[in-house]
Image (cartoon, rainbow, N blue to C red; front, side, top):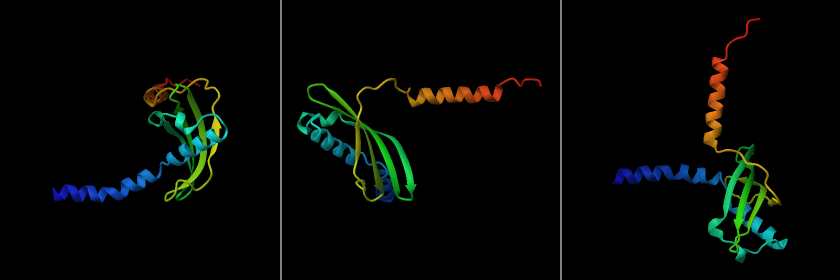
Length: 137
């Protein structure tokens, strides 16, 4: 039992560091503020349990500093869905290094397939390139 506890204890720093690289709470909370200030919705109209923040991009600026782009979907209790894209800067120690730019998505046209579908297509393409018959020149 002590060995298990020690093993878990040794893993804690890496878990804490890994968690610091994803900061969805700051852009999510600031998006709610911007939506409220714009008169689009209010915090009491949102079902927080259904809010979904998906990291679209993380761009490392320099060690410990990055720019992040999130797609955040809010659901009102009445059923309306509000989707936003956010952009902000974060560091390992602080998610709120900058303000948050918020774009409200008016309409989404098209979508990407799941990563599994993309990986399968990529493998087939790689196989095709490796096994492609060579043209005689």
